[in-house]
Image 1 (tube, rainbow, N blue to C red):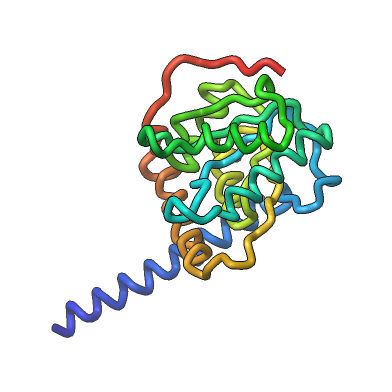
Image 2: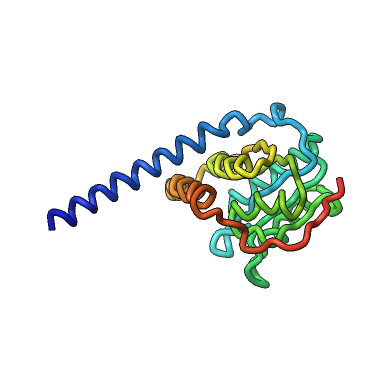
Length: 211
């Protein structure tokens, strides 16, 4: 029993160290490229909007979604980007993040011709890598909430993508669970990048975005 307890304790300590190290590494590596002030954001041809559900439980508007769409539209109308790539999950007829993002952007006045949908952005890693390997972008402006942008930028940096991030507003009603989940997602990102060399579930033919 004592040996089992010892190994359990060592496992907990090791896991905690990995989580702390991963978070420090991710934040310190890309913090200079994360912007909240739109005036400080440099120009990119394309903004990559990371997907999330448009509603909570299929009923209530998801503020994370709403703020990301608003931020992407701001970049477009301020001339910081010419085109918007919306990337997310398209798992069923009744759940389609890219379609919902496209519709929301059009409602805000973004021309349909300036929006491209990526239906295979099943996770952040997939969306970022596909923006480069499939949609052939060498520089992008990533749009999500700040806590999420760090991880997305870290993935982009690993793949040699010249990327910056623009922070969408963080909902006041968001829970601590969201932040804790991101703290755990960062060490997983390191494992995906440096240990497992995880690739997107779907790749395919290259697609040209005309700007």
